Image (tube, rainbow, N blue to C red; front, side, top):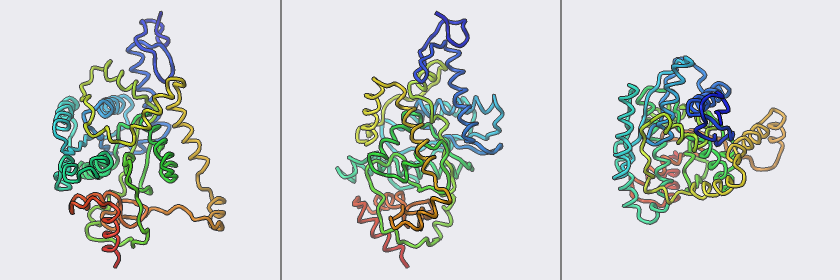
Length: 372
């Protein structure tokens, strides 16, 4: 039996996304070409000379992303200035070890590295937040972490002088996010969650904030405070997902065949994530229908495209008596986009500061404070 691509070497793998039997060399090349094709077709990096912050954690996805972008940038002359940005949440026995992999790869690729910590930004590590918050926070630790980690990643991107964030979200992650938003009934986020590049006009909530709702009065004025003026660039950092159509299994195999060093231990708080239910559901469906991951993404892309607002549809919407979805506005405290006057990150950060983990109560207090 020969590789279905080169017809020379014996096959080493049955490619999960296509079912093709490929040799090691052809699989690696095919994986890289698929990522390149997505970058080109979706215009993920529209400008040469763009400074790109690669979000790195030391895990398989971010390590492979770092390697692939470094490889493709040289092969196809993207002209990108690559940087590495890592977040230290303060998870004892976990993040410190994964950061060792990050530092190893920083030396390997000779790229600038910025590490931002929860302790630095929020005056508390995730371990401390969970410890002080008790069961209320412990059952939603991934939610708190996801929201704060997003802000830390944006801050690290600013410090690195970059204009875009590249993350290692793969096809499985995107399909899970589609299911999660569907189960929440979150129509606004559902319409954009499968995009390979998200930009400035969107609500700045994290894709992984599992359980905390973004409620609020929606009446807070868009008042530019001194703090907002300093942080307004948080609302203007696009995020890209070059692995949007790459299966998780393929990423693991690519890392193995390429001899990449990464940290493989699961986060101790991951067991509480709502995402786990979507992951299990997709894995069960895949046993009977293997293309379901990409089908979910492509289906969502088609629905989002069909539901795009056209002039005629916008005019009909004005005449309709139905309540429309709220538009995004700048947060009065930090400038990030949100559906009301105070973004979820500022609410969670204030919960940590006050050691009051009643999110709805803290939100109401902040909304009162920002009304002049």
